[in-house]
Length: 421
Image (tube, rainbow, N blue to C red; front, top):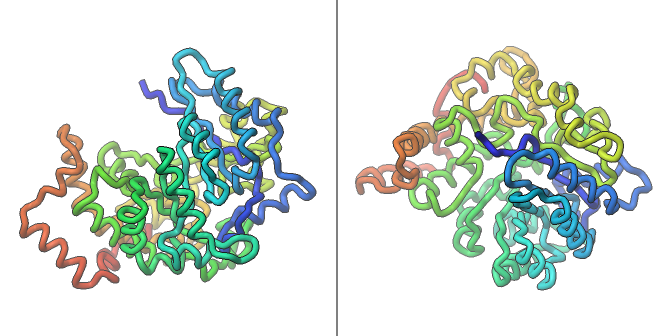
């Protein structure tokens, strides 16, 4: 029997408050939801979040997730109290894992000692080498942040803090995918890399299906996103399978192996990843922290009841129910399912709303990687390891390299003429 949690909640103890001013950040604008707020989670809300999350999970492992805004702004003592509360409510035989997404600016030795001692899994936000990272990720004074973030990574490595990298894919760094990937792998020594596409609406808060939604110039284009993923995948599949982990690649592979992705944006339904604001308000999703997607407050109604409510179930089921016909008939439906609803801002060729901004790039990636994905899936289904795909005949490896090197900017793009996904 599966012991996976029934839902996952990302708590935002500082709400939208942050010590950076990243140009593309959609969440900074959420401050307007709580005018006059200090954006600090009370110990009462923190204890209820921890207690109710632990109580709702049936398996032996519970994840307590901290995000922002910037969660380090709460100060270290807040998390010391949180860990004490976790120990207070943990059931016998239950393991509590804390995840912590941060920009790293405030991580000093004391922070790192605490994170290591309590086995926090840290996600560090970094967009690649210096020029690519500093293009959009600056502080409130407009100063670059690259050096400070890399210092935080080195401190975590010194203190043996487990960490992964969260890298946005935007209009600037998308042009240099291998520089980004190799920087993380070779210079930073990171082994777990999340690539999150920036699809930024000029007017955040508008529904994706609203007419006239415009996407900013900071956003990655569909074609650029496809090329970015393809070039990294080609390097990864030749030399890094099993040693460098890219969740998006794993999620697509899971679709081939199990018929179901491990990533919410690629599953038929969503709704099991919720967001908790600093005051206890629970929202349907981190990308839908908006008044019409507020489920309630955990001080007034149990978290589990809100997460399992009819409103939340309808939110999750709408992911498939709202797909246009072109997506439902697409070859890649099994591994895409229209990607994230927040990015569905286009119309299909026949004029139906709900086509994903990233569609063309995703289709190019799925077409380009179909053969190696099927090869790895066959290896796993036969009880072998996916990294065996790297053990090829020399002429096969040379041929694969020649294909990529002959035209790296266009590899895999327009490889298929399937219907729009």
